[in-house]
Image (cartoon, rainbow, N blue to C red; front, side, top):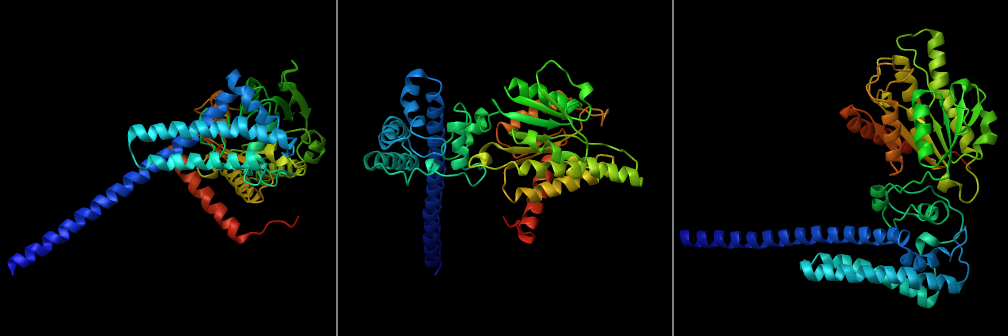
Length: 415
C-alpha cells in the first residue's frame, strides 16, 4: 500500500515538473517575443530618423515624401509605387535581415515573432508596389483628419504632421515610443504659440523657452508695459471679459497656453470669491471656447492645441481655499471638454514656484518652464512638474476616475 502511494505521488510530482517546465518555456517565449516586437519598432523608427539625417539615405526616403499631397492623396501612381520600392520595401527588407540575424545569433524562439512581424511590413509594401493599392497603407489614406493625434498609437493625424508639419519630427510608424524618447512627438518649430499671463514669472520663462525652440510667441497680457519691446514677440493687450475679441488673433494661433491666474490667499469675501472664479475659471473657459471655434479645416486637428495651467491645486492643498476651488473647477471642466476630442488639450499640473502669486515657491519659473516643454515635446497630455511625490500618484487616479465618470454620465454636444 505504501509503495503504491509513493509511486502515485512520484507520478504527480513528475507531472508537475513537466507543467512547470512548460510554463517557464511559455513565459520565456513571451518575454523574448515582446522584446523582439519592441526591437522591431525601435529599429524601424530609428532607421526612419536616420533617413532625415544621412544624405544618401534621404535621397531614397524623399521619394516617399514626394508621393503625397497635403490631403494625403497621391501625386501619381508611379510616384506612389516608387515610394514603396525605395522606402517601404527597402526599410522592411533591412528590418527582416537584422531581426533574422539577431534570432539566429541569440537562438531564442521568441525572437522569430519579431521576424514574422517585420515580414508583414514587407508583404504589405510589396503588395502596394506591385498592385498599386493604398488600402493597407493606413497612415496615408487620403481625406480630412477627423481625430486628434493619438498618444501611443500612431494614427493618420499623428503621421500627417511628419509630412506637412515638421519632417524632422514624428518619426514613429506604429507606436510613438521612439518619438517620446527623442523628444520629437511634438514639434514647436514654426508654431505660433499664444500665452496668457505672459508678463508673469512663468509666462516670461515659457516665452524664453518657446523662442529657443523656434516658436513664434504671441503675448496676451493685461500688463503690456511689463513686457519687452524688442520685437521678439507680438504683444496683444486684452481685458477679462473681452475674450471673444481675441478670436481674429486666435485664428492664426497653433497652441494656446492659458496661464493667467489670481490668488486671494486666505480671503473669503464675496468679492474674493467672484474674482477667483472669474479669473481662474470662467475667463480660462471662455478663451478655450473661443479657440475651439477656430479648430476648422481638414487638418486643424493635427496642429491646434490648448495647454491649461490648472495647477497642483487640483489634487493637493495650496493653503488658499479659493485658489484651490477655482482651479479644481477649471480642471474638472477641462477633463469634460477633452471628451469631445476637438483638439489636443494638455493640463499643466504645477507645484509651487516663485512668482507674484507665490513668493514662497520652492521651484524657479525657469526650471518649471523647461520641464513643461521637455514633457510636451514627448506628448505628455498631463504635464506634472512638482517636488511633491504624492501628486504623481494622486493626479492620475483622480483624472482617470473623473474622466470615466464624465464619460458615462455625460453626452457630447450635437454637431
